[in-house]
Image (cartoon, helix red, strand yellow):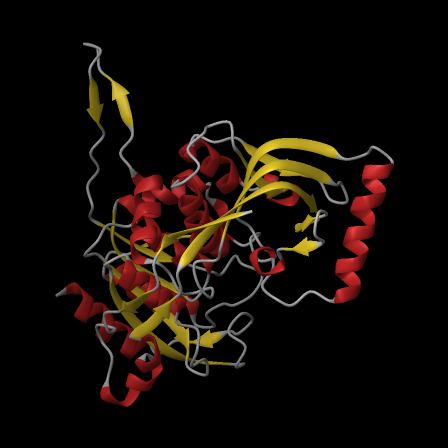
Length: 348
């Protein structure tokens, strides 16, 4: 096993919210400076993969801190080793020559794929440049177009591994987590933005390549009214106000990954309720603006505030009264007067 440090530890310094009040500074005070740990890569030989767990039979070593976000029980670990040994004995193990592993148990979510997995892959690629090294991804993620397009953008084949199948990987690149989810390395996030938004090219009649230029002037509201949960109770009033200021209403769950990227590349101002749709600020340009409608009972979820800072996007927020302290399922009522005040501030 070889361990190589790729990125040194650093302190992330974040820009304050554009409309933060003295009364609400405590919302962000603990986020303005954050310790981001060093990032390293392990280069492993003859390691086994089973259901997202990585195991080394030579010294009965696991890599659970790389593959999971919670502790793994000893009984689960022993069971995993037993299954791998049995698979070898029965000659049912499949072999993969060269691979990168950069997922964990949260990686099936849109936000986590783009902000956790992609940066880890970018780190791995800094030391592993061979195109025949495959990116290992759970089979259940094959249904998402964002995984397929990621492979295309990286110019790397994605290997979708099956549940309950044991794989022997002869050479594995295993990057560490960048930080706790919701904390980022600024340079890596900007590198991720470039990966997905670099200009498309077409060939002209003369055979030369011309960059497709797009106007950056659209104002977008991401509605969650067609989502299963986490909605705005007075959505009709919110949409009416935003249309008054020329915001377009969009339902991102109906769009392909490519359509979301192209739309964001043209966006100058983005508004949305806390949710995966706001992850698409990754594709907007620096010096644009984003407004997050937040559950006022949630004092901790600052992932979009931090992401906006690292992407050099001006961040605004609006606290809204919700029916629960649980941000992932809450429905909120938006103060229309306050919303208009912030929209006017963003128009300046």
